[in-house]
Length: 260
Image (cartoon, rainbow, N blue to C red; front, side):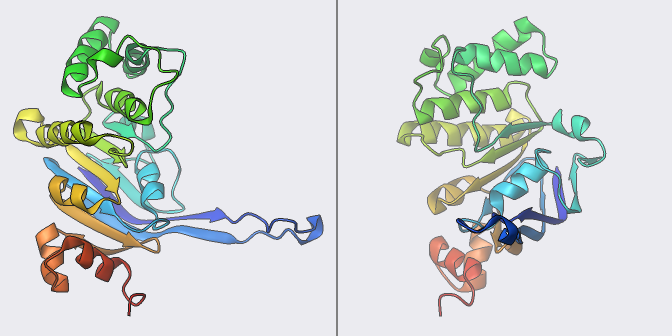
């Protein structure tokens, strides 16, 4: 289970282009401002919001990649701020920065990450074979990643995130660059991982594709202007707004006061 409570993060704003050195005063950009939600085991929780709403920053804080200015994050009861290594050991992370080593094969990339997680090489190799089948990437495993398409890089990064069989999975725009068949295969994998047969994983993903959220997510958290503005099932959010179409419901909730 992942719990985020009152998360906040600010970044220094860049100086205006062309400003004189003695006039380059920097302000602050509020990226996240009191975002809170809980993601349960055995469920897929979607983090949904407009561009710049704070989704990626929130996921990076949960993954321990950046420290929040305020708030608390727990992963299976482990405080990410106090014991980040213990928390990270229980997470698999697919960030928007894919970080694939181009001179290594897909298999070598995934096995290397598995060994960093403490897996023996033989176990890592066996796990890669299982993931290659599940993610429909067996033809990629022995190819060097240099020249991979966006979709091929995403598959490799996803296998890397799943190789140590983590209890909690963080995915930032996981279908970005995937074709229709690969997207369907990924959807089936995620549904399986969240099911009892797949270990009842806690899965948190961000997306801006309404159709994917409707098909994938058990719960949806909507953020706007760095804040949590709504959460619930797709049906509950539609009922709350009086809309039959989820996209219309999202627009009402995420852009309240801006669409009048």
